[in-house]
Image 1 (tube, one colour):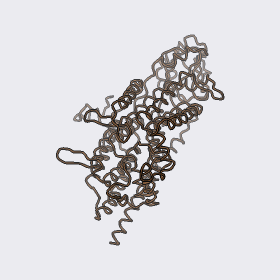
Image 2: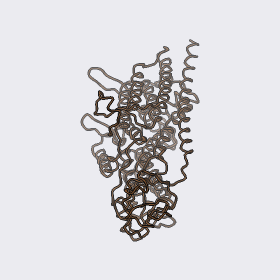
Image 3: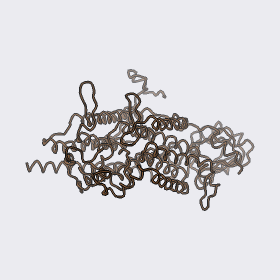
Image 4: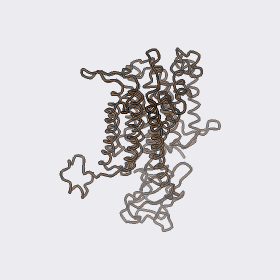
Length: 146
Length: 475
């Protein structure tokens, strides 16, 4: 019977050990996942995806990493150049202010639209929102969908 | 579904489900392997202690459970979704521990007559576990778009409030708490489902109104607050939590809902002032409840000194503390704990409210810490899915779903350990009970669906909403 008791002890400890083996393996893959996410440079605060661009500049499907202040317009000095007949030279600016993104129309001729509605002056922008400048449509997304 | 060139080479497969592109999930397979070995060893330990044979305790039941887990894995491989590979093994381990525990408790705690035969606690729990795995896997595979959740948030809120009112009015009192809703042969605890609906609604509301909640144009002393109308949901949430305490006498659900609400509010806005106001409201509400209602005060008295009446009101807590103490560091071994005292269980409601005490006795501190670690892993996965989600709605939804499980586990674990007043919530994935298992399965299924990298991009937001309201305000 002593042998049987010893086996029970071994099996009990083995069960506990296996629980920790499971945890160790999980933690290993979690760490790998987090390290991979950390390696990718994500200095930007968000991305702007080009959904629709009839003129090809910016190219459709292109993703721009955004700085805290990103200007958009037809002029070549803009961070994102929008080659569209309905875009003004200095059309709009995206700014990240503390907690949230904002889009501001810089007095453009044809206006800036968020989700189909015109931007009066300054409008907060959430991730997933669509900005339209002329015929170009862009969507604001999080920096890294890992 | 897009037609791919590979579809042409496999014309025999049924096209209802679309072309099948299997995608291996090695991490999940490896982890499930460890889970299977651990559960078999656990069952062996149980069998040796209870039946004195070197054989698993209930090999049939365990085999069915492991087959269900394997089936869930194969289904996800065949579906070819790139969803999270750690959630299923982690939850599967918790469910397996639950199965071992329920097989080992007296089977006549819960019985159900099916045809001529009577099935006991372990078999009923096994059936619920298999159903839960099926629900989670199906949701994880089938849900490809979240439009049905984000578009109809007020509909979901209405459904939730209707469920709550239905329970208030038609609920059946069980043990002084009005939690159970019985409609014909079907009975369940709506508060378990309610927590999922709450998170869906909050995700919709907070992601839509986030820019407004961040604004700070109302000043209240040193606090800077968002425009006052947008604080209304906070007050409503507070009132609902108080209503649950008063009418349902369900302190646990109220605490869970309110804690998750505050955590999501902070996650969405990053404003500590809102959380502070919420905490002040919580303290005021708690003080009010404790001074007005005997059942709340009784809970707090028991919590402060269960040994004042160790054979009466404090009995459960005292026995639970004794169980943890008997367990010590390594535990007494699966199946060796809980001797029947005078023909009755030492801890009433051990299968719903105190499974952690039973596990603490049989697996010891080491085992309990491992189990809490698995909960931590589930929460981490949820938060990670939220952090890498494409937009605010999905982000808040995943965070909220993870927190619902984590906060609930903390509330009941702390209750068992006399860290918090004992409240009657279930330990997710381990407690006995269909409502609890199915609601948590829905949570896991949604997290799996949200974690998929190939999921549909978020739908373009509609014009109007907060933006039109914002534009009307002078700037």
